[in-house]
Amino acid sequence: MQRKGTTPATFDLFADEAPQPPAVEQIGPQSYVFRGFALPFIERVLPALESVLSQAPFRHMVTPGGHTMSVALSSCGSFGWTTDRSGYQYTPTNPQTGEPWPALPEVFRELAIAAAEMAGFVDFIPDACLINRYIPGAKMTLHQDKDERGYQWPVVSVSLGLPAMFLFGGHQRSDKTQRVPLFHGDVVVWGGVDRLRFHGVMPVREGSHPQLGEQRINFTFRKAR
Ligand code: SIN
Ligand code: FE2
Image (cartoon, rainbow, N blue to C red):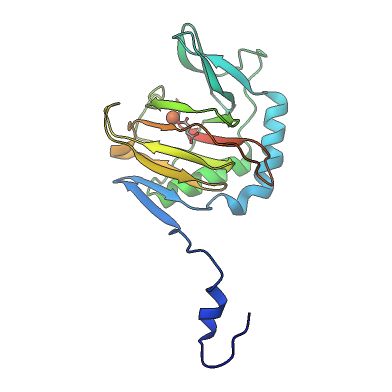
């Protein structure tokens, strides 16, 4: 819209846009949200994801406590994360197929390494990527990611599809949590002194995403072994 008079052009350029959140938000001493960081990778990520899922379909796993998770899971990389009545573990093969997990697609690796570097973690080479699917109503209760062998490497989390409210807590389950809304393309990195902080996801709300439909997909990249 062009206005008459002396209004600066920049005013008109941005007048109709909602205020944008900052591109980087620090949520802990060594934790960051990079808004939209995954978007330039999306055109390569989606077909790679489809290929991974055709080899290792999502399934709902049962926790050692006997609960069926509302989130459906798959994995790719050298190790995949599984849970059953006997416990949580990383395995080189998919117990459902007996086959090795699908290889980590090159674009996944690039994205994870670039985000880790932005957060100050150079030389991060992920060997495991957990893929979570949340349909509306699915959630993840507060937990720590502690099944990995070394905690010197960060966790890199990529959000796609429907938005969700990420909860970022402290080192005790009972610590106060920050609420961090995550949108399609956002990447969160936590590591170093923040590596073992409790975190979770509130129930995903009904909705439909133009590219991913009625779901939220989350990748978490880790160095498992
Ligand atoms: C997780 O903690 O493994 C998943 C986090 C998320 O879905 O954002
Ligand atoms: Fe986690």
